[in-house]
Image 1 (cartoon, rainbow, N blue to C red):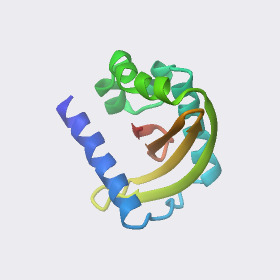
Image 2: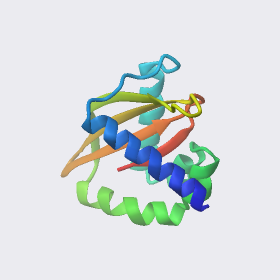
Image 3: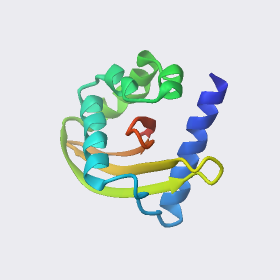
Image 4: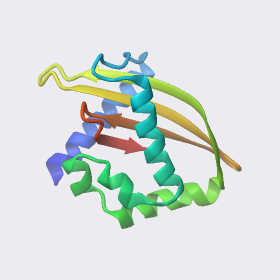
Length: 136
């Protein structure tokens, strides 16, 4: 479990570093439309508070580390504060190739507009479009 948590944490740090230092484009293994659709599905589950479906979109480590109750306790306050979802107002695609394993990762940062605010989602996918990490 620690190994999986560390992997997810490292991937999140990598994604934040990419967005802070100028994002790398999506690797050639990914198409923007496909990544967008997968991310929008995860955000739709989030807005419906269907956290188990988000967890099921994840890789084995993601599923092992995250539990629905924990996800809800971290996510519900955002939804309660921001109100009803309106639209995705901004989308930025980014990617990375792991130098050690040569595994490709595609990511997206999406800003959701809600009645009373915004929520920024950072979602990373592996080549199978399985969620590696999701941060809001």
